Image (cartoon, rainbow, N blue to C red; front, side):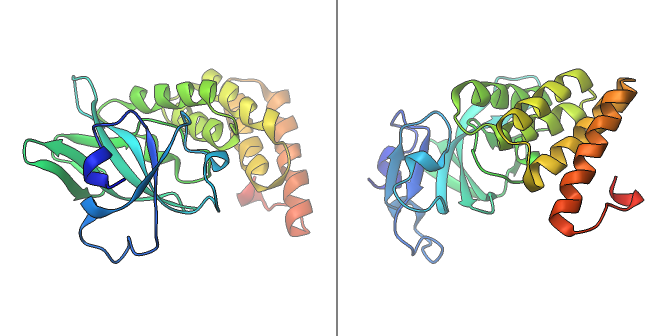
Length: 224
């Protein structure tokens, strides 16, 4: 399926770009796309390695208006976004990055892979990304990375109790390794902000334990 014939006209919310010449091709409308049926972008729905270029449903967030449907490309495993795609009277237009003059483009689905959480942040209305990730957690299978993204967005909005809940979802799925260490560290800060000193200290200790197992030494004061 060619991009020009399926984007904005078919119900799928994620596509894998086939072939290996997409990074050298200027004519993006001729890219071959393979539709992915799941409500999130997930490894289980990809036939080969969960890497390469994908196109996912997105939304242009503007101030005081309903988000407008559009698309983003995402390079995995880095989870890098390079372009957005919008529909105009003259056809599909590709632009660089996520910023437009009137708003910010963010994903409309969850991505079950780690990356920069700010991908889901639109300053025009931060709640849009938060609700997108809440939906993704209900619909997705591998929740740990999406829950961490959500917790960080809620932290930035000073919604500390909700951030604790999101971080706890991540830890319920995985409480060891590098991601878990980062989650324990962030949740400890949220507990501290809420005045729950004992829980904050427990999480700080769990972070320190994982850190020492990974690096062979206790974390320094600047790492706690």
